[in-house]
Image 1: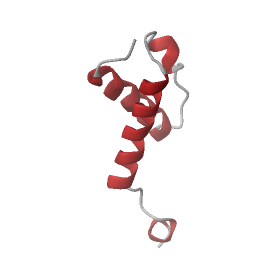
Image 2 (image 1 turned 90 degrees about the vertical axis):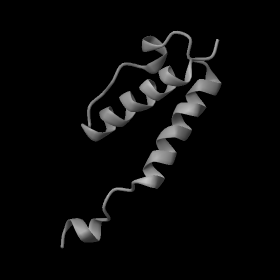
Image 3 (image 1 turned 45 degrees about the horizontal axis):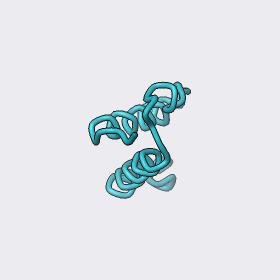
Image 4 (image 1 turned 90 degrees about the horizontal axis):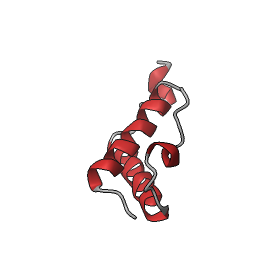
Length: 64
């Protein structure tokens, strides 16, 4: 069973927030029992697209 797009967006947001706060999160498979391989790749693609659209500042500008 594949997840609805809203559920995939929610999963992507949970992972981004965990990464931002450098904190663990529950496994997505435990939070979203219907998660399948296609959903996992869709979540990954959403987060990659967001990183490419809004990259973090480079280390050169951080320390300037």
